[in-house]
Length: 621
Image (cartoon, rainbow, N blue to C red; front, side, top):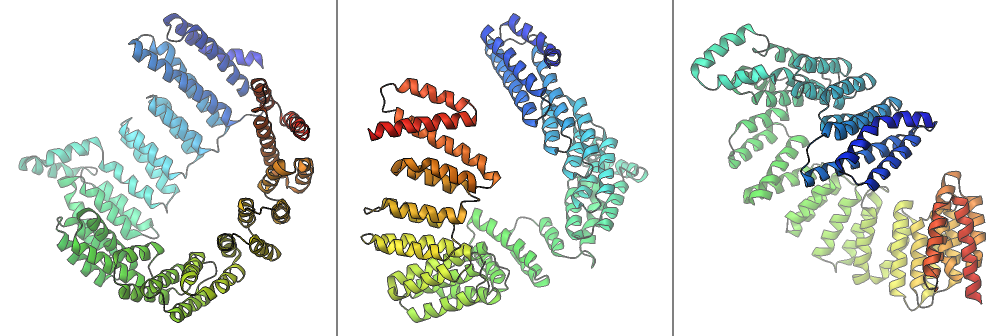
């Protein structure tokens, strides 16, 4: 192995010697640099390769290069860059390429290589890396688009860029993004951009360009038109959106593409393509007169009353209202929210926005009533309606109770907002209908889905601790009732344990029982519950630590054992360090602990346990 390491390190020998000659690094820094390079080279020679070894090496060389450049800037020394940074850059590029070839299935490694080569302006290598990556990932559309842009904008190889995109279109016929980007390339050729710039200067130039365009398939945009037609024919869905995208791109090229812009716009209004995009295109041709836009979109929503059309109108109104505080934009915004919510298209965010925007309780109830009528299973809508009802008349107990009962019957069990709905009604009942609090809690903690029930059980335990703070048995009875009726979450057990530990009448017995119950439910799949148990017993009954460790090792599944051992060792080491801080020989013990952390896991565990046992003996004496 050593001969391979020496062979690989020889490539950096000129760098070490040059750095020593020009004194950009001190002798100590150079020695450390050499040692670290040897360390990384040995890691790369291991039989089992790991991408992290390559990444660690390249990151280290990158940091050295950054340091050298900082020293150059400070000393204003610009000589022999090729002999130092140039060699390091080549080494990093070679390492990244080796990593990519060894782990060919990981696209992110290729993107890292390409990014580095671009940053260091190694364009020939970058082009080769792109083509090799496209061989391995031929259907990666993002890679193809990036490669085509590179070939066009950096290497100025227009035909090569076009071939990359055309090959991608053949391979990924359903990826509309490729088609949209692909036809963009013929339009953006340097020759055509010059033509577009000339054509917009004088009338005489326009005539000359028009004659040339009729004879040239590229300048006449016939190639572009062919690609557009082919793309629309192959596209399975979203043709109107693609056509709108084509139209927007062609608008950028001014007079030279005017005839194609008009043709695409007319296509948007044909029966085959007429949709929301047609009205959007028309709005983009208008000036920035907001009121004309509102009139246009009113007609659009009347012509095509779809969610997408109204959402586009909603976004426009929201933007105008946010920036200009336009009163009409606010009114239109409210109207669109009302339409979406009342037709059943409203989302939770729409309801929140409407709730903030509208001040009238009657209007809120009307809209939310329509929302729950169209979405009876949405607990969030019921929760918002319940909040509105409580805010308008909190003393109407019967009406609120009736609405809540209806909501619990119709709301979908797994619907988002169900737990929030219970919290809202419980907060209300605590103030206006105390007799209903326990019934609402029973319903929330025993008659809902496990996820909601566990959340509400945590709320119930906190409620019991705050209301009956001088009667801890109430909290304990409630917790053990929950424990008898699983499933619970770890948070339910932890909530009780936390509240019990805070209690003035804290009982170690009940806390230990809670840990045992938590282990019964989660002792196989969650190492955290064993760590929490050990942490508690370390303080109150440290002699049970070995028993807890033995039980955990026997109970946990294999995936959790290593995590448990790491956390357990850390717990023991922290306990030792906490003890030694109060000892007179603190510094020596801390050094020993550092040595323990550097050893293998088994040695660390044995040493830490021995230290804890010594701590226990000292404490008992």
